[in-house]
Length: 167
Image (cartoon, rainbow, N blue to C red; front, side, top):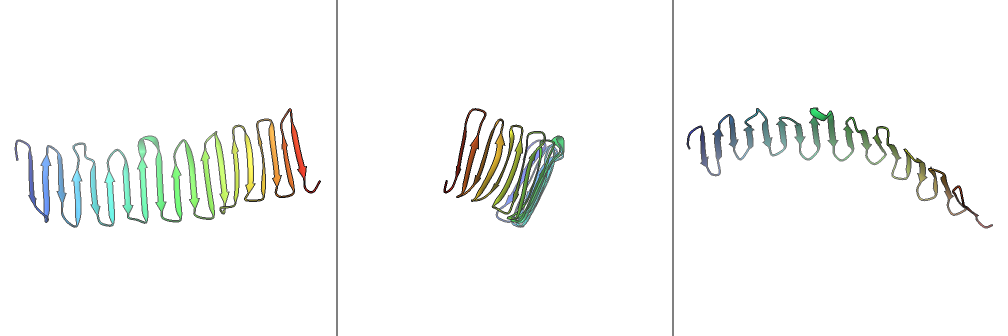
């Protein structure tokens, strides 16, 4: 102990301490803390909560939600099937394993349907793939089309290569 601070521990039953406006209590069942600027943390074996400049809620290991109001960011996990991320930079949504969309505002947009179908658009072009047989897209002035194993077509402003099996 000292001026404006004190710590008490009775191991393994509890630990308590304070310093200024902050305090900390730890027991085998939970942790509770408050910081100098009013931020707070509460955690047990299966649940945790933090409130400060950012916010976090967890029901471990299934649910996590993180928020940062200063940059308008929110992330939510409901493991193992759901993920959502929203912010001014982009929006992501995953419903595993059937759907996923990853969007960067003004830059790119990618959509997955099942693990085998993907469509992407960005500043330089687009692409659609159905794995493992079909690929089609454009990147600037070049294009490609593959319908395996029968058709391969690659074109650019200066070249073109086409194979149509068996010709």
